[in-house]
Image 1 (cartoon, rainbow, N blue to C red):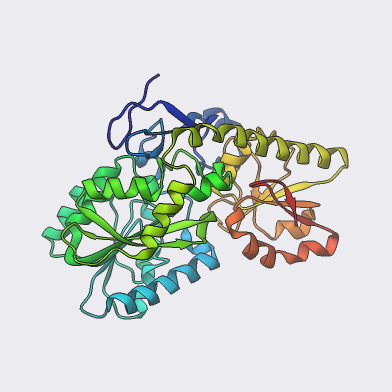
Image 2 (cartoon, rainbow, N blue to C red):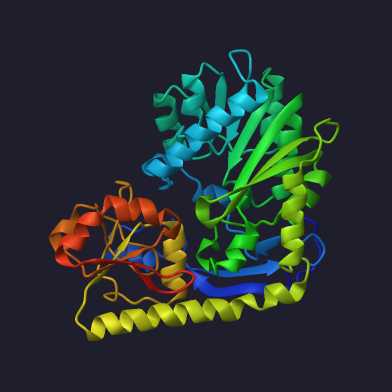
Length: 410
């Protein structure tokens, strides 16, 4: 079956990762035979556009089926992510002189994890969030929230109500939108003439360097390089003027954009990231076509680890019922029983089964009861936080395991 680029419509010819067929990574199951029987899987393949360099999934699962009232991801369950949000509010307020007469709008504002810090500074805010359950939590935090998907239509409706933004934030959402052109165009409508839009997203360069294939899942339609983002923004009336390299999510970019008419000068940091991407071969199709073999090597290493643990009579558990972990487990072909259970702090996931592998999810307190020999950290980007919070497993000889980019027993 042929596919065209979801941004520029160029026919796609180069496969980056063919991960088979998997369930939606955040679609947790009730522990019943009926729920398991109803579970569906969908092809999961990423390809790169030779024209605009956008890496993208080939199948479009309807966003309104994923980001619903029961959407299970809530940002505030990670203390390190909350600290990241607090620092952002401090830094942006100082850099752009935000105060009581300013307007900050966050797109995909989730449970108010970020905007709450602007509220504390007396800066007017508005969240735009499609998942109603997350929006309700935000409202409880005094973060006014519009339950909607963002794009030209929503941006125009907000402007018609008198809302224009001095600063917009869009953290880890740019990859989640099937129509990326419509989404980005909304920011050009919503910004004040001198406004700034910031976007954070996992950097494609780091994904490829670290074999982070587990960040590929149906909810992520795009995998973004600076080169691709600049081309998309330019066509939508935005111009990138600065970029920061972040450690979050295994290596992310924070891109700063203004209207095409904006007067801010491009920074040296922007030129430096452009050069890094070119040096890493992100402009060449052969760089992408070699990625599948590296994925196979990671899965082989993890399967060998599970086989050794079984032969030695060791119990393996997993920490974090994260979307990336579900992609990883399904692509590696983990079978029921090979991992006894998973734990997660999010009570929306506890008592459920992981999609595809049907591993039961418990509260972290279950670790003290079951005392597993190995605890595989699935959200490896939070390894330091998880190791610190669960150091008690050392008391019975438990060891932490990270599987990407290769097996490490910590």
